[in-house]
Length: 146
Image 1 (spheres, rainbow, N blue to C red):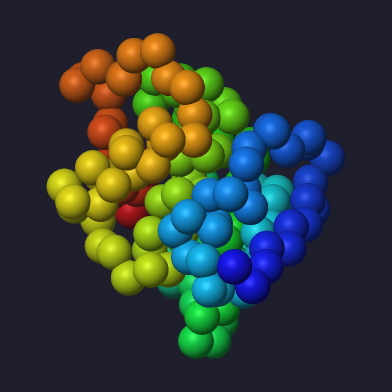
Image 2: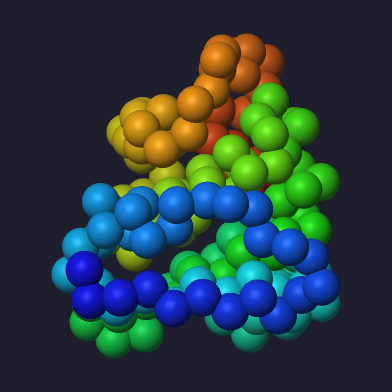
């Protein structure tokens, strides 16, 4: 892996997630930037990049070939984690995985959800998966909020 740089632009502490290992497993040859932002900044970026006005939990975009940016809003992640039946650190891990899979070219759907679950299980010890009444992945929540 070329590298992963991280910036925390919030007052929140970042959960202990193996970001480098995850990035290396999914996009080993990419140069990645990971930024943790406030809800105000996440909304501004979502409006600018996607013409959407809600506050997203995660955004990702390719900045050049084999180079990408991942933006996570920690406040939204903390608020949404229980909706997914996950701890806050596990949900932040899932958001990071979700973003990297998008950078890799994967689109929302069953295949992506299965990959997310497999990768999450590889990096986070989860005693039981969320029940089926909960959203199965970040894409389920995104679709409702769009």
